[in-house]
Length: 250
Ligand SMILES: [Zn+2]
Image 1: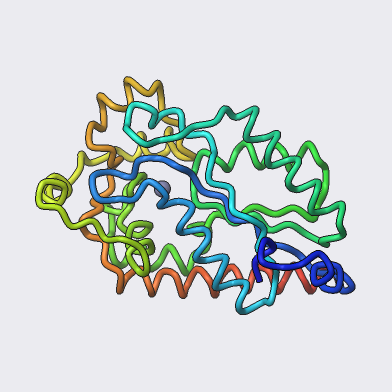
Image 2 (image 1 turned 90 degrees about the vertical axis):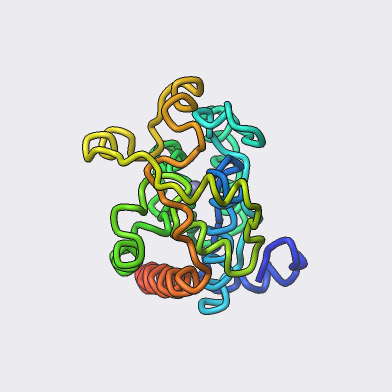
């Protein structure tokens, strides 16, 4: 059910009924010594795939280039400005709505995307655009807490890395694994509150404070078995959320 694997006539037929579309968004940024650069996009995409299977909804091509300026001191990170990101999201949403998709459900995997997307939704003044991050749902958070407790942290979290390990590369390299074996610096409650939504400072400062890229997250606790349980729970929670939306628009 990927939009890019459908023909326009199939999409037209789908739109005979009031149907929505999923739009996974993530990032292209460092995720610590053993986390993949594409972690955020992999997580939102794999959850969207599962939701699409259950709801028979189309998935729009994922958006991986997003704002991640604070990580620009780390090799491999690609960051676009908030203005460009907002413009991109806005035009993608408008295109989809123009064709008659009844709603757009943005499934997010990267903290810094939340505020700009919410601003766009407000500017478009359309109540059929939704954004949810996969960690927004209580049932998902119960698992994150149960498996990793405080070591879940804020960036390069063991839960997101666990999800990537289900069917993507698990980094096995002695030096990198040794580096990730040590617990990261513990964060204060104030730091977590002040920096939620990836409100991190200048890239130099961020690199100085968190030189291996982990922000309070003990990535080495990641495990694909936990990943499968978190994934199943996220798919179930998002599907439930979408069923409610579908009910309300019929
Ligand atoms: Zn991430």
